[in-house]
Length: 114
Image 1 (cartoon, rainbow, N blue to C red):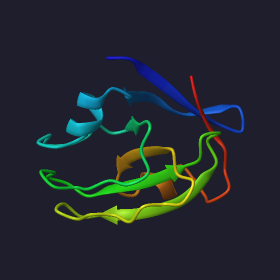
Image 2 (cartoon, one colour):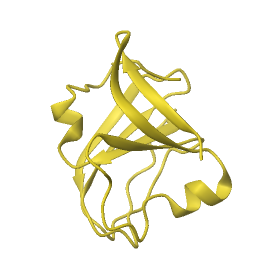
Image 3 (cartoon, one colour):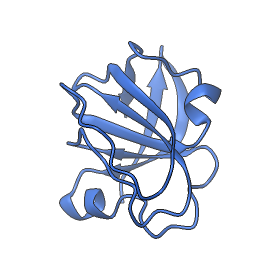
Image 4 (cartoon, rainbow, N blue to C red):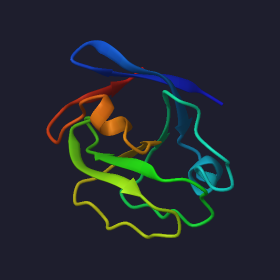
């Protein structure tokens, strides 16, 4: 599994982001995990719509364009939900509930993954 770092304004905001760019990794996502370790994330690419079936904890869902612009933030998404498709969405970053605010991620920010 490839691990990425997420940067905003040139600074690392998340040092452990799982790259879910294969069909199987996107399909599995965070299903059936008991938790996501503190300070970790999961990047689904390409993706612009998610569900939380099979999940056991709430997450923040950040939908971004191809160039990493934050288009929409869906906070504290509960398990067993289907979230709406976001126009021009290409990447989805899943974080623990509350992390989007903790990291001060806002619509319009650019997040780069390396």
